[in-house]
Image 1 (cartoon, rainbow, N blue to C red):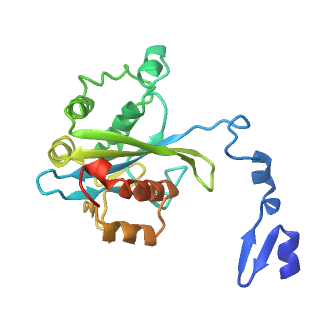
Image 2 (cartoon, rainbow, N blue to C red; image 1 turned 180 degrees about the vertical axis):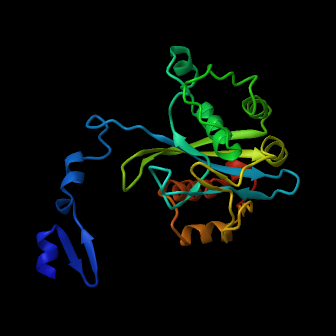
Length: 243
């Protein structure tokens, strides 16, 4: 067995077999995965959405169980929500210019994944983010400080090497409950908003014990894990309260 592992590029260490790059010829062709001059990268925007009640100080984490039959990345995994490819809503020059915005991308994904609205695929008119709902209400909340978006960093998925733009959206409970009063139980990509026990429609409390339980149990998408860990370490900045 040891010789077979060695010849296949795998190293046997006790009861575990560690795969080396020499045993992954197609991955080796990529070279340094962080050298983006060697390959194109179409990143996704992955957003940890936290519903924050300013009155009680309580917050909750919203999640998504992704259907492996309907998604290309993180299929069958628990993920943060929303998540989607960073792209414009259409191919018209003015649309491309207006949508070169992480915030606009997040707003469209919120509309699609929380409310089940169709994906904006460029077949209609460009979006007016100040008059069309739910974008107008969300933009107004952002201007009033009731919705805040934070950029955590950018990474690569360890399996697919896809780019991941990691963000956090903190939204006041009253705004969330108004805009997403008709939040769907599922969308075209999977089940929406379920608790740590798998209960539909039950958000996970944003507490240390809940975060630890999520991180300890799987399968959790790598981007979701990174966002949860990074956000928890920045409680004071995100929520204005100690962790």
